[in-house]
Length: 507
Image 1: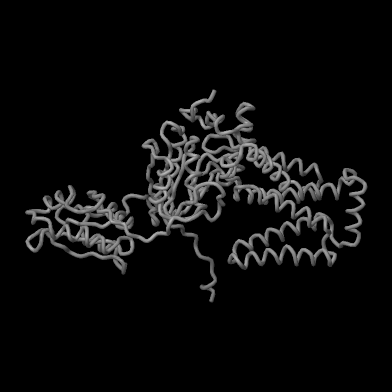
Image 2: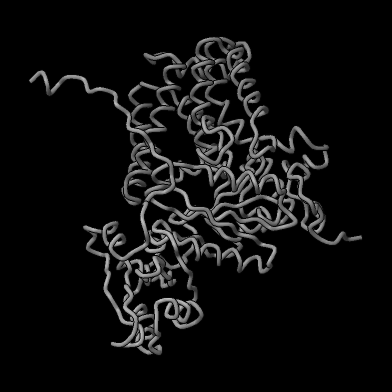
């Protein structure tokens, strides 16, 4: 029994370097050895040119390749081609148009052959030449392009990204039909071998931001690159910060719009999202529909979001501080009303607020994790029945319910949910600070948050830009309002774009 419960030695195995992953020559036997115990792997000998032709080996991974298309376009071409005298002649014939595929490449390494098979290509192996031909014949099923499920669209395109990276790049190119839209592919993940594309508009995006994005993506050395957290933590300047430093969107139109502003995009195979850098606070406060609305209405909504941000962040903490330490700040009638509502309550205001904030977070988490119909039911039960019952039973005061509900509703106004989640954590922390030292602690906590934001950067751009780094005109134009499109003739100065002008100036 002692051996079962004894502590295991902390023997951390060595993490070997990336290359070479599969040492050895490129032969059919080595490929068979790599893909052994895989029921969906097929390898068979074929004769190029019939019985008197050259023996080569044809292999693919079922599901990643359409077997019907592979048979029609590759095996038929092999059978109908003239009998070559040697392997080199057969390889040259197939490489230069003998196989009816969109893309044919020569592969000379075992690593390259394994990667081609797992990426959805067929392989023709020439054992005598220690080489192979990679034939693009991808046939994996994919989800159809549909409407966005997270970002609601009122006026605008209804398409959204899916899990296939080539479909996503095509959706972006349909918005920006210019050869200046560049895309560089990077493979990330030793086991997942995930494709990631860095996109930018040449002549518009800052070369330093483009190089930084490519370098950070290429330097990632992990086994799997599958979750959004891996993208955000490895690409961001400061992964330990709660503040979101990348903009994410599921709408190709919004993605293309950010590229035209001079930002750099990142698309990950398997993720129905596009990431944009640099991501600053004013950009997180923008909604996709701002440019589709009248500029007066859009400007009002932008300013309203900043007001809601402050209310959501400070309302519970300020209420705790005033009711517990600074009652003289309340008008007499309001103070008497608050005192009367708390006359027979067993808990302090701070305990009520903090308990309600935690309960609000639990209800929100339950609504997100449960099925959609049940989640809506849970939210209704928690908000109406439990809240009303708690007030009627005398556990909490109505004023506390109003303050917590106001903070929660205003938090939902923030367009970026990552920013809203980070502010919810700060809101709870400020509530604890207000319960200890009153408004002094709340002011210190708010100053600390502003200090952290002012010191943060995203790809060399200040996180609060252009609020802290540009002239007042740029601050109003790019952060606080939505100017008329015909007056937005210049791109944001902090992005350091080579070409700042985006349209002809109207007189």
